[in-house]
Length: 227
View 1 (cartoon, helix red, strand yellow):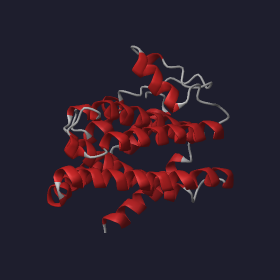
View 2 (tube, one colour):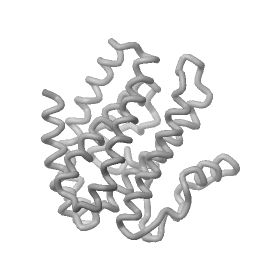
View 3 (cartoon, rainbow, N blue to C red):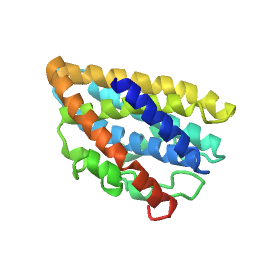
View 4 (cartoon, helix red, strand yellow):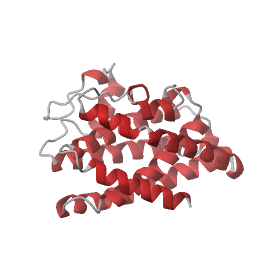
């Protein structure tokens, strides 16, 4: 039942987002934001105890994958990210790094990569008017599972509305998103157990549905240039 609801919501959102002439730029910004969050989580996860398994490596791999997705959307919009994901990682590890000053690509767009949970009403509702980083690892992995599951679903439905050249690029991204979701679920089960994981996922699924109700409001503000 939940999967059918998700597919219907994703189908609706896929149709709506393609009405925006710059929808590929929106997807690029989304992927850069996910890269940023996964990368910061990886930096924290390096110091976790051994019972967290390969969480740090998985988060690093996911961060690089998300950045590659952003690069694909850049190519489709005729721009290019100025640095590789590995280059950004190396640059931050070597010295103090101001992410707010990164010249991401040649489009001249600005990015609020570290403020997603405080900028949009839907995100505020989803995170309970807190920042994503304020949650413990169990909850972080749970909401990342929920978001990756839906992103995979959304991209599958988006295929119906995009031209063939975008479909070709989107297909491998869909497979990557599924892999991310599988790895995140495995990490959550490892540290929380199946029963606890199920309870956490139910909580975050509910929050996601509440947040999705606010998407039209955010979309209207975006269209009016308020966001």
